[in-house]
Amino acid sequence: MRLSDTEWTVMRAVWQRTPASARDVLDVVGAETGWAYTTVKTLLVRLVEKGALEGSRRGNVDLYEPRITRTQARAAALRSLLDRAFDGAFGTLFQHLVTEEHLSKTDRAALDRLLAESVPDAAPASSARAAAVEKRAAGKTSRRPAAAPRPPRERSSRGRS
Image 1 (cartoon, helix red, strand yellow):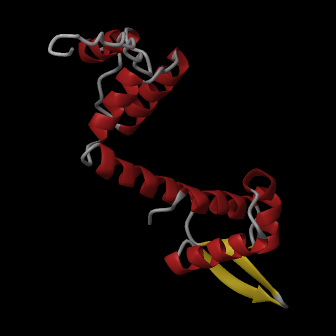
Image 2 (image 1 turned 30 degrees about the horizontal axis):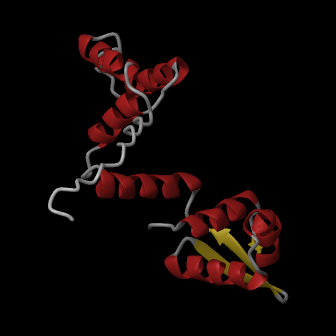
């Protein structure tokens, strides 16, 4: 299930306050988004139709509860990103994170621990390959510098009178 940015905003509010009415969601996101009550209500109905939320009625108030966990939504979002931007290859995403983003030593150590715990026979990050990746990453920045602007070309007066 793919969620839009606005749907993520609503889902975060519902995960925070469960069960949540449209008014509860608006209380959480209203100042940040500037949305009207009717906008929130429309988004909640859309999320029920998608299967992300379950709606029920208590008295004259509609309440909404998540049908998916935050972890399930993150997994689906990551899978979508992998498929769209990295041709479904996690290794390519991981390589991008290591070589193109600024990862602190703490982040690198945490990733190393996670890899070691999830793959019993995984080589530690001190292996030659991991060291080479880290060495390449150390020289890169998360944002490539913009090219220096070119000076304007002088127009030639050749062929003109």
